Amino acid sequence: MEFTKYLGNRKPVTIAVVGAGLRGQTYARLAETTGAGRVVAVAEPDPARRAAFTEAHRPASVFTDWRGLADAGRLADVAVVATQDRLHVEPAVALAGLGYHLLLEKPMAPTEPEARRIAAAVHEAGVIGAVCHVLRYTDYTRALKALLDAGRIGALVSVQHLEPVGWWHQAHSFVRGNWRREADSGPMLLTKSCHDLDWLAYLIGATPRSVASFGGLAHFRPEHRPARAADRCVDCAVEAACPYSAVRLYTRCLDDGEDWPLNAVTGQGTREAVLEALRDGPYGRCVYDCDNDVVDHQVVALQYDTGVTATFTMTAFTPMQRRQTRLFGTHGSIDGDGRLLRVTDFRTGLTETVDTHGAGGHAGAGHDGGDEGLVAAFLAAVAERDPARLSSDMATSLASHRVVWAAERARTTGTVVSL
Image 1 (cartoon, rainbow, N blue to C red):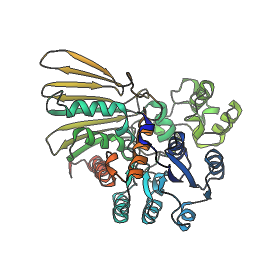
Image 2: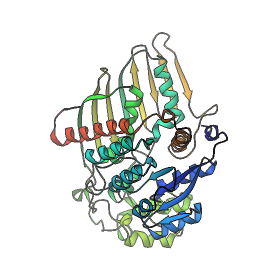
Image 3: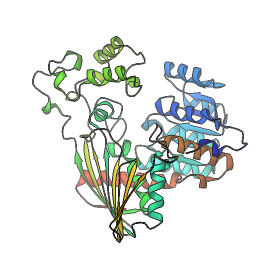
Image 4: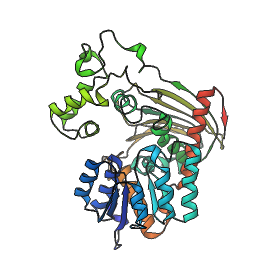
């Protein structure tokens, strides 16, 4: 992805960031790195995050919450809303109403009525709006979509798609972390995997018409707590033998110089600071003694209005890897691992391997270049007043979110849900 190809001689798009956490920081940095965007305002309640963001980007206007930004009128072309999931709807609706083009971190909102409010606000204001479905904007996705659209495997019949969450990522984000409880954020299928159901709809080029789902919280429960386990990893007699040891995870990040997920635990890069945070903070808790309730595994079966069928599996019990997908057509098949696409032609029996990170492909950080691709496309859409620069709008994202909510209804009721 050549980010600068979108720029031309245009002036930078001005940006107000609501929520200066990891995602807000990422989008701001990407926008400013090449001059495509310029951050002019930030709204962030946490003093440390607000100060760090202000030092990095020097916005002219700084607010302690989104209401202060809204009360100031329209200060920028774009509002990036990257607050916690349950705090999306009010700033998104208010800022769209003021005429801000809206880049909204996924998921749109925890519930369908809230998501509909956002989509309606964007439509009524006549602004450009997009949800951060970054998987659409990778070189891997573009290459795979091009193969399907060119008919390389004939007519698509069925798809298998796997999201390998990773054992330690599950423990960090969905057992100890901010997304552990459905009441505080949303079901895991929404907070983690709305990317995937949106991505499948994009590749298949159709809308699901019926959904079934199964899954639950299998392992991270009190009854699986080992004998002699302590409430916190730093005090635990069996910590060294536990695959979910917080001490091992975060000290390894420290030793390897990895910012994430360590920066969610402490802003200080010393072993003493890490151990202190694990002794007192949420990330040091035993994974069998947390207040988590989101699932750790789930399967979704989908039938699309074209007749294509698909299955999606999300599981915690893997290494943290790129997503893996198998696509079956009438003339061939494709096996993809997030980088390589192995295309088998039934007519010749030959398999071609396409390396989407080679020959100019993007293997960059941030969802393999998807973060960068999304920001580039969104700022180009705003600068040119051309929503076609984006592969989806708010209505499209609302449709894919509705599939998530339907799948959750199917899982909790044991039924097949029609859309």
